Amino acid sequence: MSMEIILTQDVDNLGKAGEVVTVRPGYGRNYLVPRGLAVSATVRNKNRLDHDKKLIERKVAKERARATDVASRLNGMTLQFERIVGEDEKLFGSVTNRDIADQLKRAGVELDHRTIQLDQAVKALGKYEVPIRLSAGVTATLKFWVVGKDK
Image (cartoon, rainbow, N blue to C red; front, top):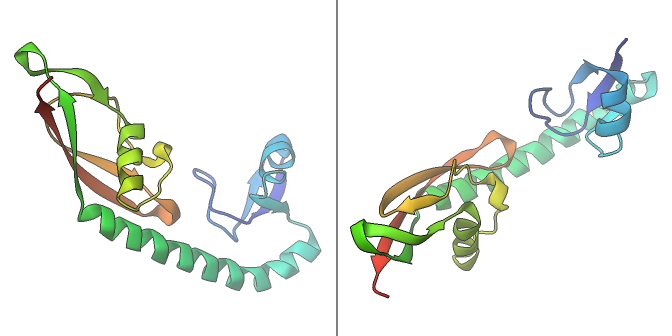
């Protein structure tokens, strides 16, 4: 059994905003529709879809432009984190995606720490690059240094 819905926002692994997709009834009724990610594909909603597609396209274009602007700022940035270093240049502590988000916030770029695609906390000195997944399918690459400081 399946259910047709119209996506109102992009949903990973399902489709783009404005598309009519077929999903299992429970997924559509219990997850997508209550969260505002989709509406049921009734005749009335399908007719409204043509009008809404233009609105959705404008919204996505505006979101993509904002994300591209943020991405260009992030691509041009290099952050520096100072951490206390012990013997053999081992760090006391680490640099996590929350640390990166906090430092970006101080630099004027507010991001959710979950968009920073750091596989695991950085525990060594050096230069790193981390992908940041912004909205509308835009990805930026942020460079940062982890340098040692005296106790």
